[in-house]
Length: 245
Ligand SMILES: C[S@@+](CC[C@H](N)C(=O)[O-])C[C@H]1O[C@@H](n2cnc3c(N)ncnc32)[C@H](O)[C@@H]1O
Image (cartoon, rainbow, N blue to C red; front, side):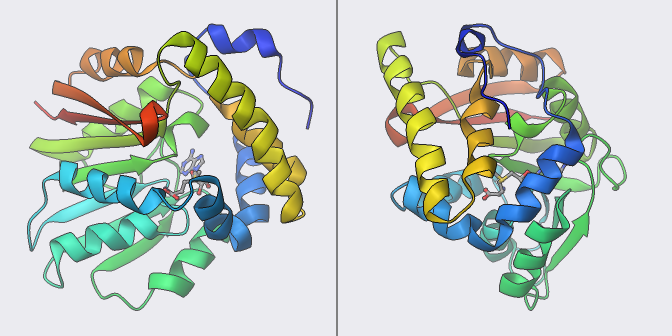
């Protein structure tokens, strides 16, 4: 993979410029090591962030939820606990490799169904979920706005759209430091697992990703109301929540 242009990180872009088949191939290739690498790179904090996303989804026993870009299914499984055995959670992802891992880990939970599908054309009807989540998936989409529009489409009125995603810490100097560290650390950790090339993509996917405030504006623009942003992980992770009108 070619090195990203460092000048890109100050300009935000409307979507991921890496073609979908390349993104999918990359996630297929790292699927077997994804969870271990995640735990290493987040110092184990990812579980706490996912719990915050589940709480933000405002589910109760019997609810129906959708986890977009579900990957290996950790958030899907946490949602399944919140909705209980009488509820239902659908996890959708574009990578068959990531879904294989999800099936292996959580396929025996009766309330979970994993499906292959694209976040930008979700294979589910309008207004069919009480809440939809996306964790560390949005920045991979070819259009962030279309991603939110599609998630809002499938949630009933009054239901939640929850987005957990990396963001640039504030103030700007801290953001620059974080960005430089991420660029150095991600491929190094990738090397440990013999997936250096794939892990070059991770910092690249953050180049030009909109700031938290801008992402909140995108959510309002597509019609979500009561949009809130909470920073987690020393400001490096943002939890965006909006309600479908
Ligand atoms: C960084 S992983 C996050 C996985 C999981 N949500 C988590 O929290 O660990 C990003 C996931 O987004 C998926 N993805 C990327 N583009 C997608 C798209 N257009 N539609 C659905 N899933 C997509 C990838 O296959 C990958 O599993």
